[in-house]
Amino acid sequence: MGDLKHRLTVRLSDEHVDHLNEIANASGLKRNEVVRRALLGEEIPSAAERRDIQQILRVQKNRTGSAVF
Image (tube, rainbow, N blue to C red; front, side):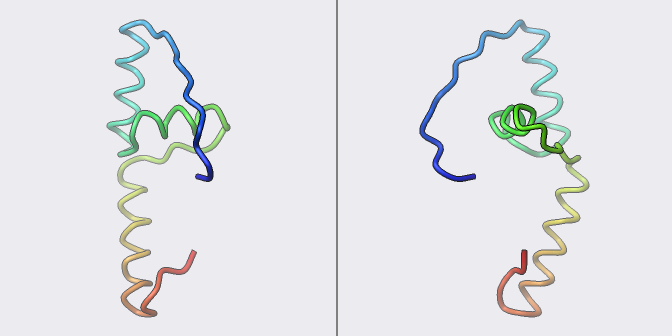
């Protein structure tokens, strides 16, 4: 993610926080990562997609001794 050295404070309503929490829980990402991806227009994967990717990386690492990206 690079050099994260800036902090941004955002005021949100309870409804917005609930929505952010729902997205974070569904994706398996932390709230900060959800906000970063939303700001950058990047995809926010579902928790199932993240599990699938992590499983593939584990298999690759076990076969080669290191993960291939």
